[in-house]
Image (cartoon, rainbow, N blue to C red):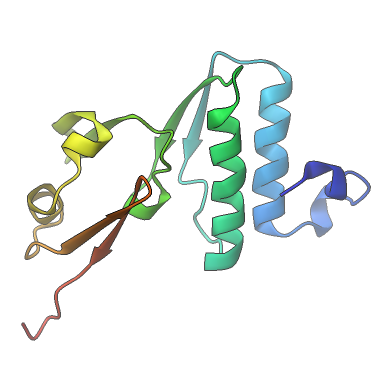
Length: 135
């Protein structure tokens, strides 16, 4: 989502997804070494969430990108540029390492205390298919 398109609009009239993108751009202006994004997609509808995640992916891929710490409960929000993952469960480290080696069905089942979901990995992103409560 291009911030140029948003520059003449008052912040208050922007959608939540546009506001998140503008806040991310604003944070980058200070050339920080690290940006912490705590549940940045909370409250976004799926389409706007995907637009924001595309913006985040562009930031991550930039040659001058700061380190990004993404806090999320939703696997599908972990973008391909997020190379390392730390999974916390009740305040304790449950797993850590390269994202592709950490994320699996058994881990998800363990941290959410559910039957193992089907995990679909595509183009560096993950989606869970939860078993039916009737299964």
